[in-house]
Image (cartoon, rainbow over all chains, first blue to last red; front, top):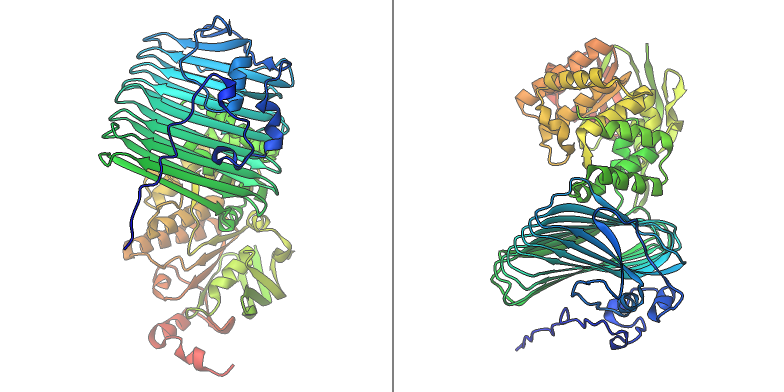
Length: 383
Length: 252
């Protein structure tokens, strides 16, 4: 006879604290650190008095506020680097959109760093029934660790884009939490292109019923890049939904990506709907992709809950087909990779940023100017 | 006047048990304005002939030559062959997720023509070509071959042929999987293309029924990796009534 025992709840509760000493220095053997090249992130495991604070240009919706005086959102860090950064920042980048306000153009926050190693804290609050797109550009060319904390008011609709780009030697460690209000919609997209070691931890919780969260990701890893996206969606309110779609393209020896999709559905979260998907495209034999979806249900009373994960090789038949129509090999490869990302990028509201991201992806893939011109012409067409 | 000349072509595919020869000395010349039908039983290697001419990396040419107007086709990359004026309408066109038909057509037309077609004339050109093949305009917004029915895939292949205007077109089993109406529409597309461009056509087929719509000038019987008999259109009638048996059992 077989006895079935419930597995321990290991997705939650997670330790959340502002006190650095509540988090021991990880060794790399812990579940949440097991993939990370620890030597590369060691500098962020102890407070560094010389680390500067990430800044941004103030604007109509963006303010730089002294950390001691800032009214920070209640969310607390769940790992040591994030707690250190939170304690270490001299100022907070605040993004505010008032209730009922509709901001037509994306609010662009370009992070700038005064020193090679930086801490950052971005606090975004969007009032009830407001509508906005916020773009965070992480391409300052500095190592950074910090938190992005988001509150989406009741009935509001916020799209946030975090574009991790810049030199291939930087470290980016970010915790990104969004709290979604009643009947609100949050779309959070992480576009990871640059950096040497990148670890982004997007998480979502709901403060009231009826919220919708869409977490999107597109990442491109090459050569020795390590890119980890560790997602946590906690359904603790009824009638909410979550969609997670992350896609990665990998090439080159030593490229390593990790995607962890943890979804926890609490007992009280009845009538929810959740789905998560990760797809990885290996462009050659060099890279390694780890993909781990975890779905934990404390209630069976859900509308639907599912996940999928697949990692596949670049399809040479697609290349042959496109080339047999006269399209040069390099351009054909670009088309296939861009096509791979299209469904993720299509969900990003801003057309300008969709094109900007495609251009950054293509330029990372080494597209020639001629081909770039050709695609610009083609994609502006709609016969 | 374009000429595709295939001379004593041998090609192999790599298998677990080592290389296996599939083409065993194919010689065939297709001139502009003429239509050649290559007919043969399943497994005779006739589709391999099409893929080898197009340059599929799976096959290795071990002997012989293929030239287009004297230029060595075998030394060209797949895309160079297309730009030189060769086109292969595939039996199993490949899905390319995330790439719309519209973007795909314009990218290939730009690559083949060497410059981007003027937008206004291009839109008109595509619309007309789609109309001729009775394709819904919404088709252009779909992803290349993704979720296409068998008939849609074949129409899409012929659409590309009529827009890219090759000098020599190879149609690999274009009739397979088509119902009578679709076969008629696709055949009309091929006939219009022949009349308008004067291109040479190499029609590879297992069945004679497409030859009722597309009249060949020459019919070749293809068995065991080579052409065993050539003749006029009447040879197709012989195959229709007698099948391939005589050729298959004939001593080599």
